[in-house]
Length: 198
Image 1 (tube, helix red, strand yellow):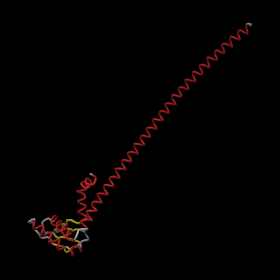
Image 2 (cartoon, rainbow, N blue to C red; image 1 turned 90 degrees about the horizontal axis):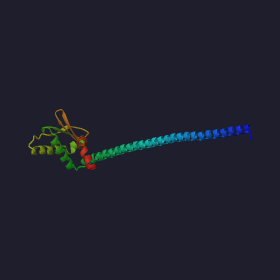
Image 3 (spheres, one colour; image 1 turned 120 degrees about the vertical axis):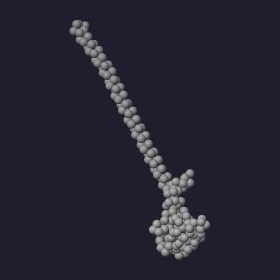
Image 4 (cartoon, rainbow, N blue to C red; image 1 turned 45 degrees about the horizontal axis):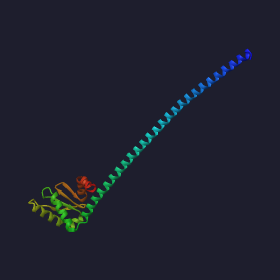
């Protein structure tokens, strides 16, 4: 081989070596870039996965809270309906008393509600005509048995009520069934709820 061929061969060998070195460096650089992007992709994937899990957990917590609130609301409505039913039942029992029981009920109520035994008893026109005198007589007997003044009298005034109203001068004490049950409800609602729901 002559000198030029040797020089060309040497240049070719150096060029091949340089190409291999550049190719090796390119492979290494590509691997580094690929590793970096894989790491970034894994980080983005992990963050997205974590974010999705947090969002699912938050949605579950919101749904659970909403379900609990709805359940409490449903229980409260049920309790209110049962308490209302208990008071409706009490009203029906009073309204369905026998005549003698209703007279006793009104007489005891009048005696208890009377301020000084000198009141007028206002009834519905039907009650005033059918049982008015009996209520007054029985209420006065109850007051006498307690050694109290017994001067209750039937009012000429009638009202569209169930139960009665006691009138002393210009002051009226509402003893209608609805008023009594409303007051009892205020006084006893928590007790009734406790009895019903333990």
